[in-house]
Amino acid sequence: MAESILLGHAPRPTDGAQLAKRIRTLVIAAEPAGIACTSVIDAELDGADIARLHLDLTDFTLAGEIDRDRARLEPQGAPVSSEPAVLRNLTVRATPMRVSGAEVTLDAQLRDLPFRWIETDNRELAVELARPSNERPLHGHAIVSVPKHQLGAAVLGLAESALLDMGVTVSRLDVDVESTGPHSLRLIVDGKVRKGLLGASVHGSASASIDDRMGVTLSDIRLESGNPLVAALLAATRGKVHGYEGRRIDLAAELPEGIRLADVQVRVTDDVILEARLV
Image 1 (cartoon, rainbow, N blue to C red):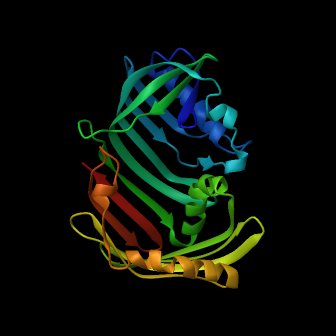
Image 2 (cartoon, rainbow, N blue to C red):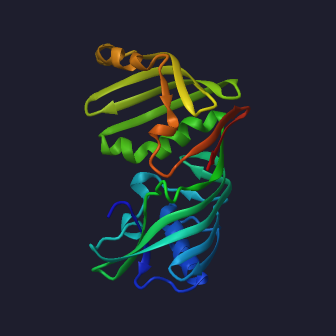
Image 3 (cartoon, rainbow, N blue to C red):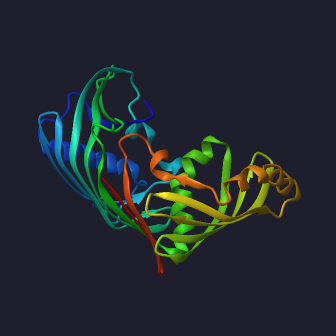
């Protein structure tokens, strides 16, 4: 049940105060030990549905992958029952929160998120997010900003779990973004990675532009390494990588069912600011 989030013991809460208390316990489990939880959580239930959930995660610190208490975040038992529900209104704000040392400012408002209440054979209660559908699409908008010089740390923190699953460790990741227009940018990546006994520095860059129909076009793609062996491996895949050169990717078509992007904008000042709107 890796996609489920533990919310204490069954049965499910019957009022917003009970739900807020359980979510606070979850937030505490996701922070490093010894950090006082200052998050503000407010919830309102309407039967099985969550009518409203407000999370102010200002000063929240996301623990590293190896520091998280999985037994307090994920159910350990097998599911024995489930009940469909909808999170009608979700607001998440942070000014800022901390992800791998990066200060991430977040303002998101989402509506109509389907989920299921799950009970396990250990008498645990969990929630499992369901996929939206074309009949019940996800609505809302989000603005995320990260100081430009901290972008690499934020990306690494969010990708840490997937990298560990692949047996890859990253000791350094620098990401630089240059705005080249209201819907275009240039991305430069410089990092040091290791898989098994093989370690190397890797350098990459690419330009990307987004058109009015949510199509992304990549150009000027470069990928190289100072390690001769890794450079040879990259050269073997260069043809595939450069197959994306000048190719338009229909971002709207690539998104899961029920998620429809109306607009995406990236602004770069001292911060990298990403704004997206769903319809």
